[in-house]
Image 1 (cartoon, rainbow, N blue to C red):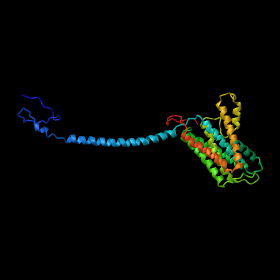
Image 2 (tube, helix red, strand yellow):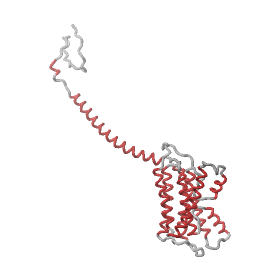
Image 3 (cartoon, helix red, strand yellow):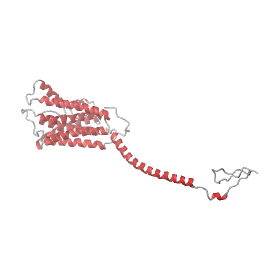
Image 4 (cartoon, rainbow, N blue to C red):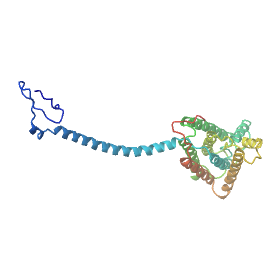
Length: 321
């Protein structure tokens, strides 16, 4: 009789085939005790090895993930656009800086650094040979105006290229302005620039062009910042348009009028800044006003590091400029 075929060789029981003339199939029980285990052992070893490598890779990945997470967080933080709420306070402080700078610059060197309207008048007077003293006043004013225009172009295009309201862009902008004030303060503090006010009848000292240019350069960055932040009512460097806009405002006497409040604050800040520069010139050295302005700008620069973000993803760019 034919017996049902036993499990195949892939099963649990090894088979012993009989000769061809004998149809019966026998199996050897003793073969169970000698079953080869090398393949199973090898598999277990391979599996163990894989798990060991996997655990090591997972640990390494976790460590790298922590580092990547920190890097990504910092990257998002500095690439995020800042929240423009309350940035008007920053611009009002910048207006105070303009008062300090122009009060010092005009009193000491007979030229403006921020308010280019006055410099334009001096240039126009120079075309007719006026004023007689100091000679070449128009030249200093022309240099200040040229540097101011150049600064505007530079800050505008760099801001647009880097995204205007991005945190890192504002930090860079105000860091450059702060560095300009620091350089001007050092020039005066070290005596490279005469720390005493210029004698109107003495020949012009061309070294004065250095601090005037530095102060005009940082003033250009200020007015660009006011446009970037979308607060046009605080230009930080001029008062003529500001006063006109203030008086023409139909809601001038309204209880709630943020634009009016900003204009009034900016006017008072610039006025008080110029007064402070005059007072400091009587009490201490000329460099005091520059160091004061430097300290304020440095505080603003540091403030951008912790300023509240707008909450937008880093991939989005602000198209306004």
